[in-house]
Image 1: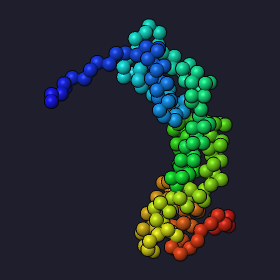
Image 2: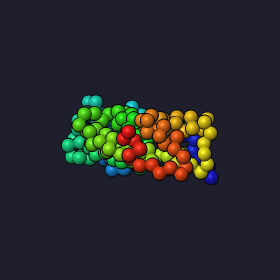
Image 3: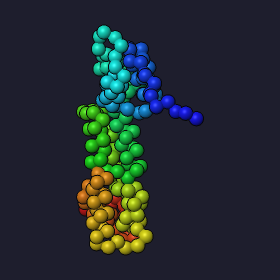
Image 4: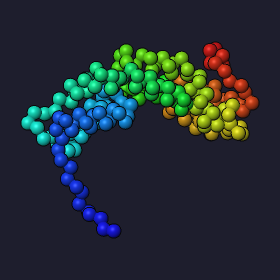
Length: 180
């Protein structure tokens, strides 16, 4: 079988093709306004534009938001639940929603989800990484330092991270351990 080394030329975009790309993107991926805008701008840069007037990407994004195809608050809350289940902390969520361009009231529910479930997120992380009460064997001092670093990179508060890392494998941890 022979392969053609030349790529097929993709025609430039126009308003209807740009709308179709946007619909396909929001239908396939949960996204924020900022991410949709960046995606459409990138596609126009890559493929070019076939109309005399520049595309009004901002208006298209706002139209999609008004039709609830894109909802920053729902996206942020979904991201918070996903990070909670994966064991990531509040600082990690703050970084992710900032990178997604979510601000103000759109981030309120998401931050509350992880703020109210910090212990659960840390417990999920410790269980997943076999740290502290979930360790198969006691950790050396050096290993505990690495585990603490992993907790911090995952976005957890240092006090919570220290309590999990210092816990023994037979310790039973609960939220009361973090309230003192």
